[in-house]
Every structure is written in structure tokens, then in C-alpha cells.
Length: 136
Image (tube, rainbow, N blue to C red; front, side):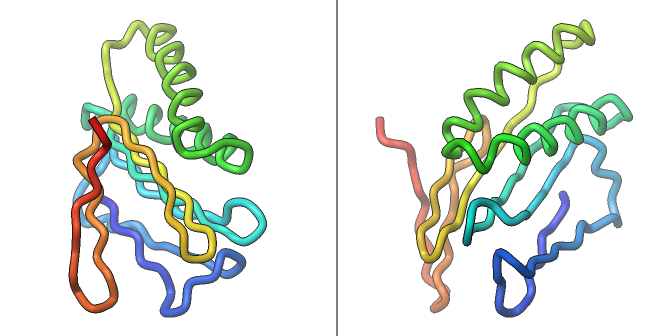
């Protein structure tokens, strides 16, 4: 799995991350990038498979999310990316699927949507954590 490391004092204007390359992660994706005027977006995705085609699909997801993130909420991004990715898979004659987590952070507010990923876990500065679950 790729891991994102933000600098000590993250700023949407000065942001960086580094992917771990010790294990082949052909269909795994982690991305952090500036979003909106003063925000940041976080993307975690996993395309099934461990080959070049899975890697290509993961790159496609990365670019699709980056294009849409400024204009739509995380849920809106997932709606549109799902449609585009489904068409891409059909064009490839492929039966793959992907899980995708998209979050935006603006000031101190985190908004996220998840499709196929486990529940989100929020860890506060004091080490306490809680699981976010979608309402039934």
C-alpha cells in the first residue's frame, strides 16, 4: 500500500507526499493535492489486480479525481468517476472493479465519500480515535 506523508505543518499551498515503493502496488493509489482556494484533497484507491493494466486504471482514477475535485463534493466526484470508470472498463472488455475513498479538507472540516473501502478512522491529536460510519 502506498503511504502519504505530509510535512509537519501542512498547507494546501505547500504540500508534498511520498509513495512507498518497497512493495509492488500496481493497482494501489494514494494521492494528496491542493483543492479549492484553501483546501486539500486526499484520494485512496485500489483497482483489483497486480499488473500493468491495473496500474493504468489506477492512473486513470487519479487523473479523473483531480479533474473533478475542484468542482464537486467527494460524493459528486465518486458519482462521476464511477460512471467514467465503468465505461473505461467496458471499453477494455475488462471485469475489474475499484474501491475509492475521496476526502476534502478545508480549514478544519473534513468531508469524505467512500465506495468500497472500509469505514474511515479519525485519529485526533491526543490519540483518541473513532470510526465514521455511513448512516443507514
